[in-house]
Length: 408
Image (cartoon, rainbow, N blue to C red):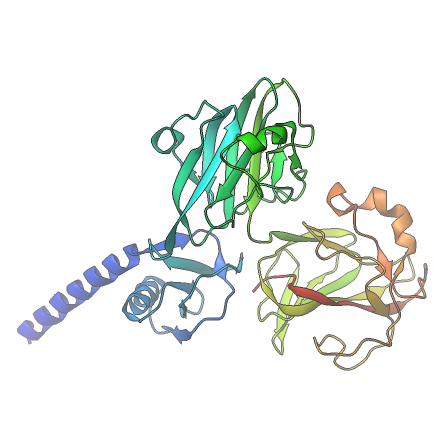
């Protein structure tokens, strides 16, 4: 009996050692959960959290083509992935791990800054300037960063201009990274600006700067552009922060009275006050007056954005919402109606007979109710546009494309 117990202990220690080694093979993508379709799913519900995590890691390492996994801490659910992933979200109790070094394709990034390179970040990770880049203080020297990760989510650069025109230019060997107006640049420091989960939606878009006139004689040429912050100051001495996010970041929503945003996702998490699921459709409900809500925005899939509003007699009603890049933006291209129809929230529901939304009375009060991030959006409501009425309004925007609002 003692001998059998000894063998069991030895087997357990060997297995634990293997699992620990296995876990080290994977890197945690801090705070994120993958939204792509998994090819294998299982639950270790009878095990502790740590045992379940070890088993999930072990299973991925022993499964052919598995390169990453999600682990859900509440249910000990293990989801395996066999391809490069691009869709992520901040989801409570879910953590994504990917295989260390398993998805590097030897891409390189060439770039330069005018004048001094101070800090350089890939996916929020600090890349030592002193160890990786020669000529950090010479703008005409091309800097090269080798082996860009296949899972490239952000590039962030801090540099200093020591007079004359400033800016930066960058281009990857496969053209995936190109400096242009889709970047963000500022001359103001913000805490955590380089992090993946930092919301830079209020930063100004980068502009093609004065330095662009030199591009034809510079090794890094078109289609990359010399970019700068909006002021494009000449002959100034200042620090500049430029970054590019390759995953959509946030949807900003103002809730008025009773509001729900509905997406074709299976799980909805946010800063809202209630959360529930029904038939694979996620609902997010807010009940406070003019409540600002930030929802993570990383998922994709053919879908639509909808809302339901319950207006009271005491005040005007409306919906206002936008994504950080204005891809989703409330205006008269939406449709709103105050009659209920079965299946109105389905993606394939035919809303051709619905009237177009109108800009409501609340738009007149817009400036005093919302923050600057929402100034491109409009308060919309149904065609009745009642100022003091009791009515339900249903609004939807179809054919938004391949982006959903909300979380995975």
